[in-house]
Length: 364
Image (cartoon, rainbow, N blue to C red):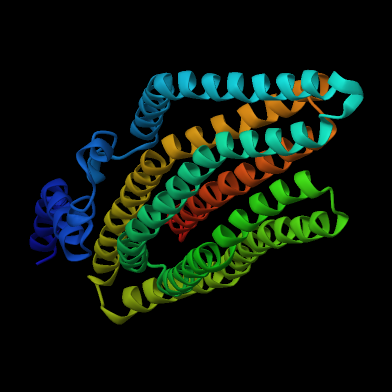
């Protein structure tokens, strides 16, 4: 009888690789990971490896390809940005020259005309970048609504039941808060901030400056508050839920080994294999999710950053060419562009942090 049991165990060990592959395939289908990329476009899919073969090496390779393609894709935007910089500097120089004619009598006219010209040049780019940031935020949010449930299921299947629920609830809640804060407050305030900056430049009124600074403070405080609360929540829940999951797994393995005589240890080892395969799927989904988010957001982020740096450059050079009011206007418009950069970066960062936290749950 003992020899028969040993023969059965040896046969089961020989079948382990095939069974492990079957288990991974079945678990991938059960949690819906095989349909995760169906909603993505082909441009995004080209950077994504197979979930079963997603490793740190494939992540590094895909990320490098994504970065190089993004840099090469910025060629046309570089030329457009340089034209914008040239136009802004030309307006600054022209207004500075005209202000010195007729003993400064043309200064009010030059101030108003220069303000209108600078605002018109920057308004188109600012409006385009606001639309780009809002569209990118919506894409990342839509994909997160598909990614987070899959990560939650994979995390729970790998043994992190408590952590999976806590991470999913927190990530979903704070992403929805971010979307509502951006659409309801931040984007309208960015428009108001730019309008107040232009009005302040023409009227030179300190009250308008205070209103503009208040609008900018509300935007930045809202972004900092959402991201800070999100990271604090993940840090706190990660400590307590991770310990609870580890204790639960340890107790379950001990109970399973002692409940079934002779074969209890074998069943416990088999359960360990199932949990390990679920952990492999979880990590693969996390890697694919991070690459998908980066591929959706890195080019818009780079485009907004390019416009932001261009306005910062014009502000720096304008200090030598233009008047104080016009330089102050460009500084305010660059801050508005920086706010859109922060919005796009916050959406990407929060999703990436969520993926990393799911991948770190429960060491099998």
